[in-house]
Image (cartoon, rainbow over all chains, first blue to last red; front, top):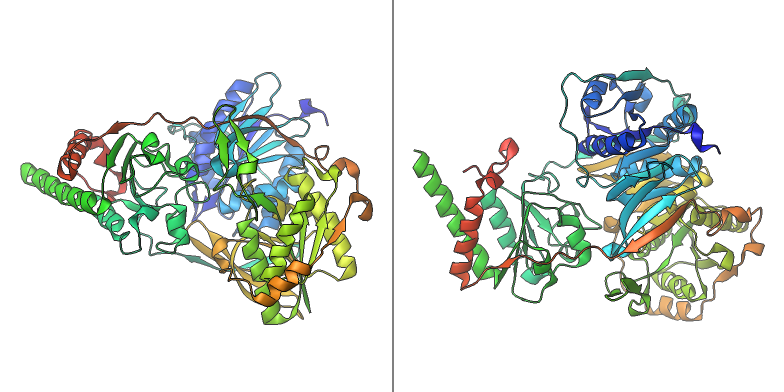
Length: 341
Length: 279
């Protein structure tokens, strides 16, 4: 394998409901830094049905080139069809790095592609860097349930691949009118070669605000004692128009559904304000919320590790503190409305 | 009759693991070795499918000799047979080398009895990657079905499976030809307490143990450290934040202080999309 043949930083562009998913734009931002450092180009690989027009968005977010596979066979994500397209693209143009969002789609695709190439794949990276001269990707990630951080290298194989968690990298501010090169490709896969069919896609509609997109997250932990006690979290979230988050043990106890879980095995969140109520602050939880703008912890145990990761801490009984907060917030909001009138 | 192979791993309990603050290393002895929790759900699902459709459940692990304990745990859950591959040559394997070694073992198991379905946990709690399952699927040229949270139907005669695959905001219903590989989410089932019969069976059970020499057509360069494209170059403890301001006083004073602090930062509440409170 001659490494000189491999150049360019690629991002797999995930499309959902006709739009580019946010993590792909975040990865173009991260990829741009790597590409600039290496003096190489940044490309997006766009696969789907009726997706070619999305290339314009990708240029605005930093892509120099967009490889597009636009065909009805790519209507829904399926491992075999997407993998085939990406493998062919890789073999033809030889990128040195490919980044994927650590989503259900991105992780599935990256694992399959890594095995077939074969090459190394680092999962759930949270920090990326590249060696300017050698092009060696330094992908760092939490390991052992977030107890340690590890930097993973892939020295002998190309391309180097990593999946990256949503919300940990920053998208560039879009540059309207920025353009790039569109390269239209056709994959050699046929429908009869694909062994899976998507029969139906069911979207949850009950979830009002997704926690990984919310500006305010009110999260509760096992310290609230019971599902009934957890109600204070729902109440404060409703008052503030925020989303409800939870620690792993709360989800395991069945007080709320898994899509509320914040942390290593749940979602990473980066709201402007994060309330941690009755959450002790295990490292697995901290890795999922530490990049929040302002972290407020309420816990009756003054020794709870969560206070180490908070901007403001209140030691006290959540059942006394939270209702008071709700009442005071409501008063303050009403006051503001009156002032405006 | 269905033959299901569940791939499992013995892992340190990362919930309990302690860090040595002086050396920034993990004190592995502090954490008990357990069956990877996601794998317990994989084995339970295999046992449930066996009850629904008839058949046999084999479990497979790669690990050092004490990992026999994890296999015994699976026998308690209701698995019928246990296989372990154990050899120094496997040591230091990353996900690519691990999937290679397990694939070779599955090929050997399928000579004993053809394999219709492979089930893995979503990921291990020590590696956290979720890459071994799909890797095995690709190597055996089976469709990988990841993030499965429900097995709706299996039709052995016609050779297909229908599953629910979890997405970020819902799920998709997928039909796949069999044999295939599924990696399953925790919510797929609840693992009940083991029955006394199974516990007794597990206590006496001795799994089949293979070394590299027992497997066929193995390229040794693809095993262990040698066969692993990724290496860990650096390990460090995540930076511990130093902690913020503790608010003083009784409940009313504390909450008033907090409110003052928050209301000073009005931009925090100027939220997009109308999903929040506007001041």
